Every structure is written in structure tokens, then in C-alpha cells.
Image (tube, rainbow, N blue to C red; front, side, top):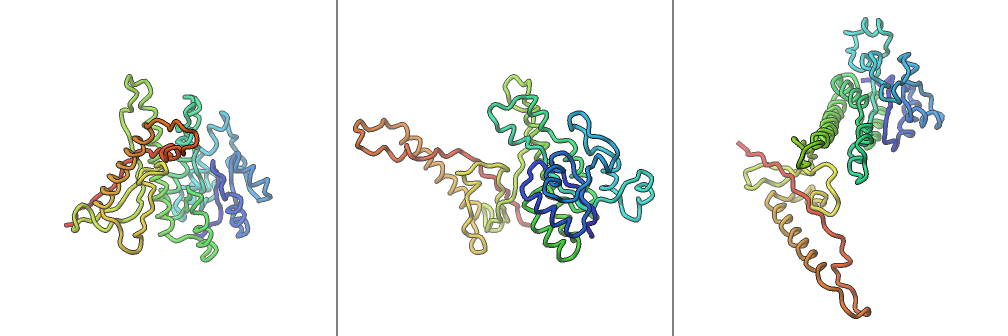
Length: 305
């Protein structure tokens, strides 16, 4: 599917200018908003504001920018089916959407984050555009992760567009991303006002780490899933050295977690020992260790028929 017009509106601007410059070199018309527009214009890349395209200004300090029929109609339109409606509202097809969201989860992780700050970091227009584009992935390419820029550009340079397989993969990634984003917001908001401080519901977004050799038993298929945003220094972030050869099994992971727990206990025990009285004596090794944070294993075992 060819890419003729793209809409870019990102919070994380990693790789943005380079990506947009390559699109512009291939005569892709660019639309953008706010800070993204400023970054592209400052880099000398031809770009039109969404405000100019829709004829509607950004309002409410940027709360409403892209919630407009000329944006979502251009994303959801089925070429050859909805042409008359597009003409009626004066919209032009958008073939590529590049959006990443306000950093709600990063803001939530701050110890001093205020309620109003968190509310303002709930993205509305971004998820709406992502979902519209992902729903219509039969025509529209949608990118929510800067890590996908190189592969999209490579395919575009080779064929002038993207394949259905690529668009479907990216659309699936978008729906998983927006679900996790909404889950984080829902978990935080549902805990507000609760006497015990615990949320009424929790959505745990898990991402596939790698396939396992087998599950608890050799006849079971299994894969290792890690919690999104898991901290370093835990099993979820460990690298599997069996990739492409002899992968771990579910039982290997259980054993590894037990070993890691034993190391944590040893670390905690040594850290509680009194410091040596002589300043010439080296400090216990434990005082030089970084504490290991407990992290759950996430593994799904599927019973084979």
C-alpha cells in the first residue's frame, strides 16, 4: 500500500527528524501538531500543521488538537468506498500515522507526581488516532514505537509502501500499547479514594520474551512473558543464552528464580552484619552490592492436545 501523506504527532521525538526527512525525500506530504511540528520545521523539513489542514485551531491548551472529522475520516476512510464522504468534508487520505503517547507511566513512577499532573498526562487525541489507523490497517500504516522507524523506511524505500503483513503486525502492536496505557491509567485512578489504597482492578500488560523448550512437562508448549517496564536486575530482564539452540524450560525458570531468591536472602543477611571496627579492613562485599528487587516471573503454559 503506497504512502502519500503522513501525520506525525509524538511525545518521544527520538529519531523523528531523520524519519521525517526520509519521508519528505520520497515526496510524502507531512502533517503535524504542536511540538512535533516545531521540531520538523526547525530542521527545515516541509510540514503542514493539522490546524491548517482542518481549519480548526488547537484549543484548551492543546487538549483538543486532532479530534476532527477531517483527521479521523482521513484515517478510517476505505479508498474507493468512502470517496464521496471524504470529498464532502474536504478531507485527504492519510496513509501513515506516527504517534506515541504522553508519558503517563513515566509520570506515575515519579514519587512527587501530583494528581493534576497525572491527569494532564492522560493522552486523548493520540490513542484515538492510533486506534483509528490500526482499525483501518488494510490501508493505513501505523507506528507507535520509534524502534520501528528503520524497518518501515526500509520497506518503503524498497516498494514505495508497506505490505499487509507489516501493517497488521504494527496494528496489533498499537492495540497492545493502547490497552496497556489505559490499564495503567485505570489502575491508578481506581485506587484514588480507596481506604486501603488498593485499586479495584489491575491490568497487567505482559510482553513475550522468548519461547521455551517446553512447559512444566515435555508435552506442553510454553513461552516466557515479562511485565512491561520490569526493572533491571531481575529474572524478567535476564537474557536467555539458549536462543537458537537449547532454550530454557518452564522448570528451568522456576529453578532460576529460586536461586535468585537465595542470593537476595544472602545479600540481605550480609548487609545486616555490623561493619568491621578497623578502618583498614575492607568493607563486607554486601555493602558494595546493589540490592536486587523482587520481580515476578510471568510464564504462560499451553497444554498441547
